[in-house]
Amino acid sequence: MKKYDVIIIGAGQAGAPLAKKMALAGKKTAIIEKRFYGGTCVNDGCTPTKTMVASAKAAYMAGKSAELGVPVAKFSVNMEQIKRRKDEIVLKSRNGGLRAAEKTENLDVIHGEATFTGNKIVSVRLNDGTEQTLEADLIFLNPGGKPFIPQIEGLNDIEYLTSTTILDLDYVPEHLLILGGNYIGLEFGQMFRRFGSNVTILEKSGRIVSHEDEDISVEMKKILELESVTIYTNTQATKFEQQADGKITVTASGNGEDKQIKCSHVLIAVGRTPQTNDLNLQKAGIQTDERGNIKVNDMLETTASGVYALGDATGGPAFTHISYNDYTIVYRNLIEKQNLSTNDRPVPYCMFTDPQLGRVGINETEARERGLNYKVVKLPMAHVARAIETGDTRGFMKAIVDTKTKEILGATVLGPEGGEIMTVLQMAMEGGITYDRIRYCVFAHPLYSESLNNLFMTLED
Image 1 (cartoon, rainbow, N blue to C red):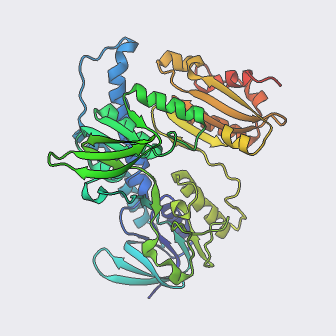
Image 2 (spheres, rainbow, N blue to C red; image 1 turned 45 degrees about the vertical axis):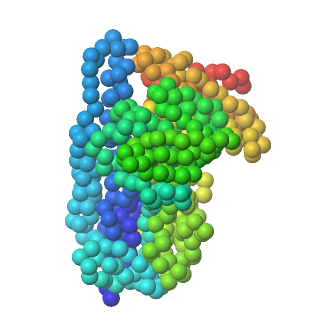
């Protein structure tokens, strides 16, 4: 058995930087990764998908450039080249992170699958087939998640795609049917529609992005339908059948009737599930909830003293930046002796449809449910000078403010550079800058954020 000060399971966006910092702090550290260094973000999430989103945007702009006086007579989509570019960027990021870890003093990178065999004892089945047993006083779990696959008749009889396997396509599907109308489904749906696929999205809720305000959902649906994406809400797949011609027939039930849809490919995008089943957590006294998420307190410690869980597997917000913030919290608490928690931290996020959907703080629905004294301000992007000049006036800015304190309680921006505009408002929220000050801020002209003046100008003090 090999003794370490620190063991980290999972080299994702919390585990990888934490391993380096612990090692540099003088802790003898081991980081165990069963697949690819960098976790979902680098290998199957942010890096590859946003790389491909950029290619899809280029195709979209080529198609509409005539509106800007630059007609493109003809263009084509080269999926092999798009995939090759994506793979090169992913490998550069993955290998860069791995090399940096391997060069770090006090840090051992172990390639294999970890499982607990006792209290703070970890067995690793190495990728070369051998086994190793490790122990440490401090253990951090960053196992991440994987696509959730629902139980639907006939699904296992077809070669369905997930958010991971769809990244390996080097051709454009003829007709892509997507289960799920949230982040993954909408980003891939718009992307492959722009590449040339027919796209159908089935969403079991009454509207897409159902966790957002209804006006956001309505606007997003309108934007996607303008690009000829077919969206069925209140609808779910009940049966899949593989046809002799290679096509797939999907039986969809919704709004009181069944319909059959024939497609070439199916993408399952109904959520993710934590990768905790194989860790044998009960051996270490680590409790999970009914979904397999690791239970943690507000300092990210599990039910086993000295064992912490970070990132998606805790059931918290499943965003890369939250996982990274988890790492900074446990590191600063344990090494710098601070007293930080996850309570009340901001949870900004951005969906990389085009236009982007950026959000921070509460929305109108939440403000109403809490019974707050609030006002709502909205500004269509059609009233934003920069949007008019660039020829993209889809969407709107929206903010929720406290009527007494004039504080900004939340903001949602569906529009060009929506994530960047949202971040400006997040900084105001973090710094306690009230809307009456933003109303008269001097912003550079003509930026998107300059129109925050106009957004708050509609409010009466």
